[in-house]
Amino acid sequence: MKLYHCEGARSLRAVWALEEMGLDYELVKLQFPPRVFHKDYKEVNPLGTVPCFIDGDTVMTESAGICHYLGEKHGPTPLAVTKDEKDYGAYVNWLHRSDATLTFPQTLVLRYTMLEPEERRQPQVAEDYRKWFLGRWRSVEAGLDGRDYLCGGRFTMADIAVGYALYLANTLKIEEAFTPNVEKWWERLVAHEAYQRAVAR
Image (cartoon, rainbow, N blue to C red; front, top):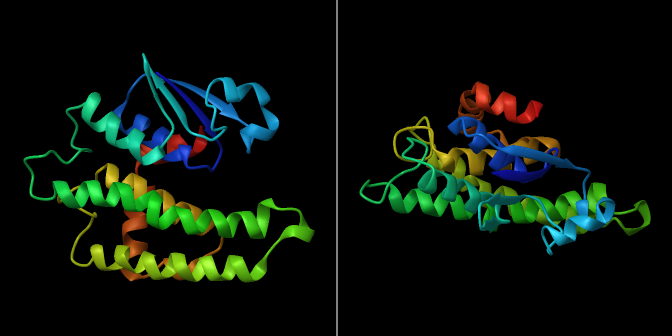
């Protein structure tokens, strides 16, 4: 297996998942954004985005999807909630929510506060999407009420996928995301040796 990754990018989800499962993989680190600094990367992933994950003939570019795939294809693992478990629907929903609902507005905050040249930055757009993110992030605080983890009664790929959104919130200095339940959950996540290895890599 091979994973193309940029430090701090959504590909961190996949690195963390691979480390948690103890799977053997090759990590290819690229400068962000790879479509600018690594023109030949488009031959690997025509989208020019990270991650790009290759497992034999399988090529994947969606970070939460890679987490889902690893849990099912390379399991069994307690990181995956199975179809016969009560929380399976919640598990799949959290995996999709992690990127489609939570990380999406953050990428606009990132773009218009850090990535664009100074003259192209849009403070109002960034602030609007910051508020959008926080409005949707409330579902995580509520989802953790009375629970240590999001679903299945244990740490799963859903925690990895949603946890990355909090990692990015921290990078973007969106401190309001660290509500009481979320803060305790984050302390549990970052205590994982696999998370620490993933960040170090």
